[in-house]
Amino acid sequence: MILFFAIHLILFGLGEAITESQPGKLTSCDLASWTLTNTHIHAIPPAYAAAIAATGGDPSGFPTPDWSLNGTLASLDQVGSARGILSISSPGVPIAGTGKAARKLCRELNIYMEGLVRQIPSRLDFFAALPDWRDVNGTLAEIEWIFCIQKRAVGVGFYTGYGDKLPGDPMFKPIWDRLEQLKALTFMHPGVMEVKPLYIGGFLPQAIVDFPQQTTRAAVDLVLSGTRSRTPNVDMILSHAGGTLPFISERVVGSLIVPQIANSATVNIAQVASEFARYYYDIALGGTSTQLNGLLDITSPSHVLMGSDYPYTPQIGIQADQALYLAWAATHPQMGPEVLTANAKREILARRIT
Image 1 (tube, rainbow, N blue to C red):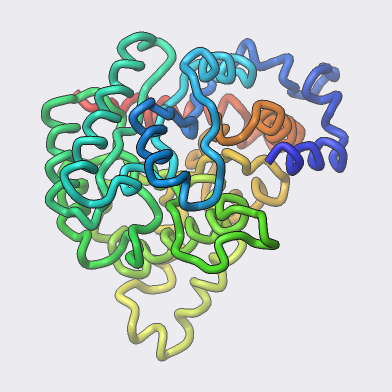
Image 2: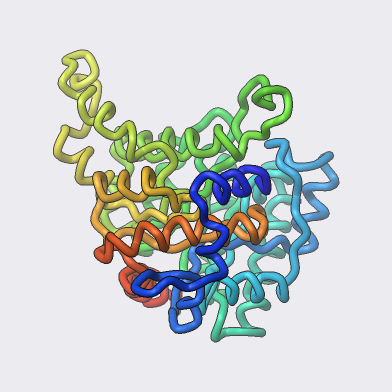
């Protein structure tokens, strides 16, 4: 990851943009006056780190980084984020399986994140964790506790897949029905994929290439399965600028002109395009002009949110991604920092569970 963003710095000449201000252009020097909300920033509670270590490490092949509350606050400060919405990255609670141990871990993580928010309520909120959705009853029980007892999170996080099941699988309908009743805000993060070989090129872990593809598969599945149209009151944030969805959305929409595909679908072309636009998209690791222009093709600026992916992305990478975004935003004010700030206030901060 460090090398990836170092290459960005070299190719795009962004070294000076991170440290020096240029007249008439947004740079990181302007960040102190912003009130951005970072919607994609992770916590790694001790119990979670221990659960990952107990299984031999993250099954995606990505190393678990060091994490601290002070480091989180420092990262927020360095990229001009007044507030961060904490969440649990993959592999998440499913690392502990689908039984009682996993339910216990899930509750412990939610209590831990609530404690962080209570320490610094002016800077932090969180997306509550959920068990592996294949434990339907356990997931429903935790949803009830989050929304009816704890009443502290802004919404719930879930993953792009559980084992061989995508999130639109019929098995998960009771979960979606309850989230619809609660008008829940949800945050979908890439989950571990069962793919072989595990490493691309013998060393590259899933997070780099496979996670964006998994986001796309899950987002399309939720639309084509009819899950999104059945849950009009569930708002959903897609990670990392929607993965590859902005670039292949037309392929999905266009596939519905094929009779054999259209006859199997429960949604039509207009509905699919509308549902893609209804998603919210964070731009963690999505700061290139290609990705940002792609978002403008698939949704409106009012559905775009800031994100950084700390601590899984080193700070140099976060700043490089920020610099890419700033360079683009200087000529695209319709999706500038003030717009992303307003989006978060409207869509997230106003959604705290009470």
